[in-house]
Length: 218
Ligand code: SAH
Ligand code: DHB
Ligand code: MG
Image 1 (tube, rainbow, N blue to C red):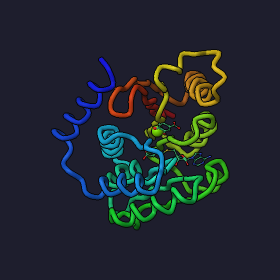
Image 2 (spheres, rainbow, N blue to C red):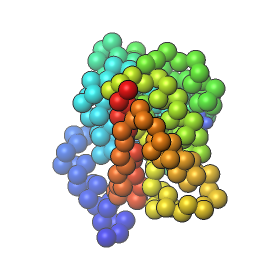
Image 3 (cartoon, rainbow, N blue to C red):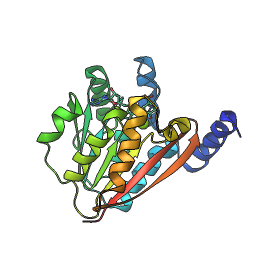
Image 4 (spheres, rainbow, N blue to C red):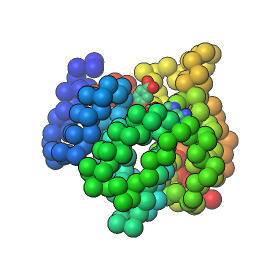
């Protein structure tokens, strides 16, 4: 199996299971035009985030790493009318584009985009959050997970993106801070009695990567 097959299958699954979606398509298109990196979650992954938010009946969502707002829109659409989502983004250019995309998707009433380094914004948030999606600079994954846990209640779910990185996660002696960030995240979760977690390897049009999913139990 190769990337071409994974992409073809992702296209098949997306065209079969996911109806055409003008707001999401426009978000990716405006992100591309503005020169943002093409690293948003895939449509099938976005739908997974959306379904997780619905399955947990999330009314409050925290996202770390907004980019152009693609995953934000998937998540925010799962909220009830009185729900809220806070998303943290370091790059003002990304945050401004995300705000416009979120507004165009009709979700501005539920979503707050906070500009700045996530570690600066995190201490001042109003929790708890029913679902947290961690998808920013991978070196800070352990710190982000600690904050997400701090803002959780029993039953909250924490999802972390990009935890396999083409398989590089197994390189214990890697000097890449992103790899060490993912490995330290997993060590932290393994030692944390308040969470129950698993991780899944994924292939698709974003290549070979994975997601860690943790349930906060106490
Ligand atoms: N969740 C998005 C993709 C996020 S890409 C989606 O799937 O649609 C990662 C984002 O994290 C980028 O926009 C990057 O600017 C942002 N980022 C990087 N370091 C950050 C930091 N320290 N604080 C907040 N955001 C950061
Ligand atoms: C990168 C970041 C992401 O959030 C992602 O989904 C893929 C790649 C990156 O920084 O390379
Ligand atoms: Mg990601």
